[in-house]
Length: 205
Image (cartoon, rainbow, N blue to C red; front, side, top):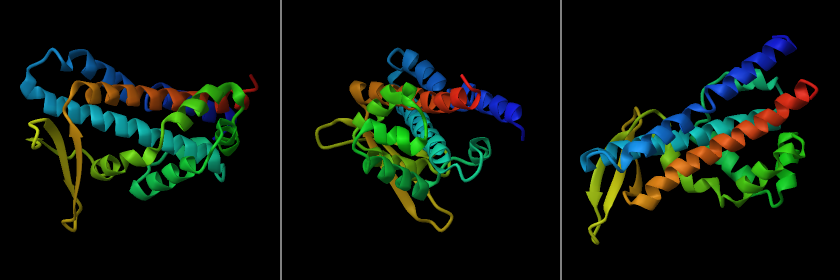
């Protein structure tokens, strides 16, 4: 793959694969509070799937930019990070204390400083561990339960081939639902910013 082919691939990746979760999340949020309450469980599960996909895509791009053992275009042409890779990403970010350290880790210039600041302020990607584990193998079983206070809870179940069961829970309340959409948007924005900084440097801008 020559330089022109690499840049073309990465621009296409940024415009489609990276942005897809935000597009879906925005459309779900547009109608979730207007549709029949019976559909809210399924739509919230979809929002969570998109937020987690956006997070894993962010991890994929960060791993590719940080490593550089192979060209980023080749490093991105692979499945999304699995749970163990996600944990490694979360721990790596959690070990950084300054936005400049994120830029240095990713080998990108200060044009992506705001995204580095926001990512550092996010407060820990490990909070998504349970959701990543449940969603790692694809769409899970989604149910609605109520806790002792009567609050509706989204419950996601998934099973490995060996029968091991994983679970993630999320309150079905408005602020949590909106936060999922915001999270997807933030993850996409940071991913595009970091990848864009690499593309600008690679193309000599």
